[in-house]
Length: 120
Image (tube, rainbow, N blue to C red; front, side, top):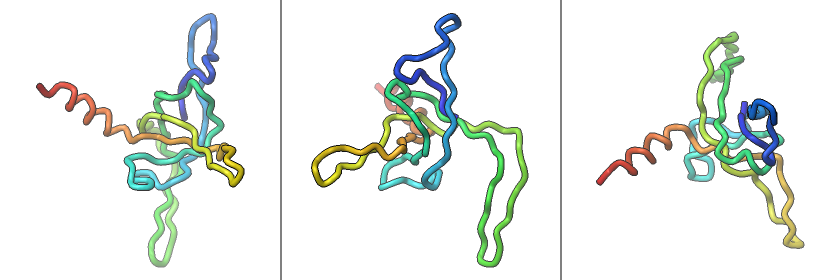
């Protein structure tokens, strides 16, 4: 779930953000392309940058050499990180085509940024 203000849109009376759903599109916890982020498959728009990204434990699949195990539903919600941008690819004619993917920087980076800002 990504919570934010797509193109500045919100509940104008209460100024409440919009909650969007998405799926993890890359392996969470691994560095994607060497960067501390993962990809989400979600229909997101400008204005969502900086939005918190959460996941609710639903079904977790663990693959072993001989089996795949499904673990049932849980009630925990986890902060995954911060959405930063949508992903596009450049076509042969130099135009950009959106891929429907977005970058989510891992949440542990927030502590690192704060710690480095507080150092004299």
